Structures are given as C-alpha cells and as structure tokens.
Amino acid sequence: MKLFKSITTLFIAVALISVTITPCRAADSALKEMFEDGIYGALTGALLGAAALAFTHKPGKHLDYIAVGGAVGAIGGVAYGVVKSTRALAEVEDGKVKFALPTIMPDFPDDSVRGKNPVVITAELIRGKF
Image 1 (tube, rainbow, N blue to C red):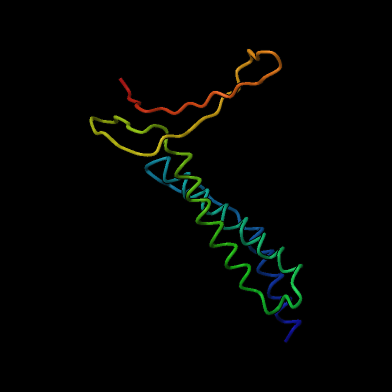
Image 2: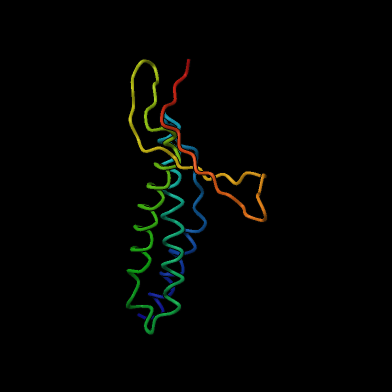
C-alpha cells in the first residue's frame, strides 16, 4: 500500500509538471493573463507542496500538502494577474469609466546624490484613450 501511494504521488507530480498550457481564447487580455497566472500559480504551488513532503516524517500521511499548495498557488496567481492587468485607478474605455486599484511602480533614477539611490514611486490615477 505504501508503494502504491508513493508511485501515485510521483505520477501526479510528473503529470502536473508536464502539463502544457494551450492558449485560451479570451475576449479580454486581462482575463487571459489572470487565467494563465492562476494556472501557473497552481502548478507551482502543487510542486512546492510535493517538495515539502520530503521534509515530513511520514510523507504518505501528508499528501494534502500538494492540494493545499495548489490551492494557495492558484489564489496567489489570480491575485497577481489582477494586480498585473490593472493599470490605473480610473480608466475611460469606449465611453465607460472603470475603477480599479492602480499599479504601483517603483523607479530608480540615475541622478544619485552623494552615493544615495533615491526611489521614486508612481501610480497612474487616470488613463484614457483619445
């Protein structure tokens, strides 16, 4: 029974690693980014959960680490996709106003003063296409 669980875990890990993602047909590129980031996050989380099994006393009793890692990775990937696809606080697109969280972008200008490297943080508040 122990050998069966080990082989099954190994098979699932190899199957998750070798999954290829085909391009999804989404009308909005933001949805596509969120979907892809969620899938990549789930695969990465499941892989990390499987790697965490090596540090447990009885790995066969802790196979839920793979599922928990995949779920946390999927949630993190979708959250990352939402933040990555959101650009400004208010966007005007096709005559409609959309509100979202702005993307905060750090910048490191080249004009350092006396060995200090200043950090400039910017965030777009309004964006529109004219």
